[in-house]
Length: 237
Image (cartoon, rainbow, N blue to C red):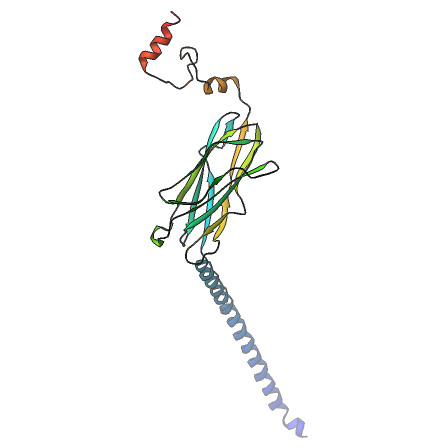
């Protein structure tokens, strides 16, 4: 009798409870929809802050040419690109294949920005076919001289020895870029120089030769005065 008397109340209570459960489920769904983008935004901001707080820098090995012939000389440059940091010292180690390239002229340091040479360029170390160019340079004791923007480190001249579809000049893993602020290696990225070397053709040989007679080798660079060229031409008259 008691159960029958309270039956309408029980049904009404159950309907209210079901309605409240649906409202809670809807509110939870809305909360999740709003919370997920906010959490993602927070994590992105945190990652960005960590990236900005961790200074990084890169070294690029490059050249105006990407292909050449056997016997040609190739000028290769090393460039420093700091990222929101200062650089005061570089321990540079370049690696190259001695079967494809040989050093024609020593490493020329950019002494305007790196006036102090702590370790002179060394070319004597090789492991198998891989040879290394190593040096250590600094901006000096003053923090005002520290590098803060894209700067040339130096250049080196190679001679192409043998034909190959691809040979690389890379920044070796032993390279370090140091900052006065923390004294740790802040080098995070390196870009190698990739070169293709072709066989020397007859036309290439003619262009590369000294060309004693300009009248025969018209493709050679003009050297000397016009009077000298006329004199050379008159030898054949």
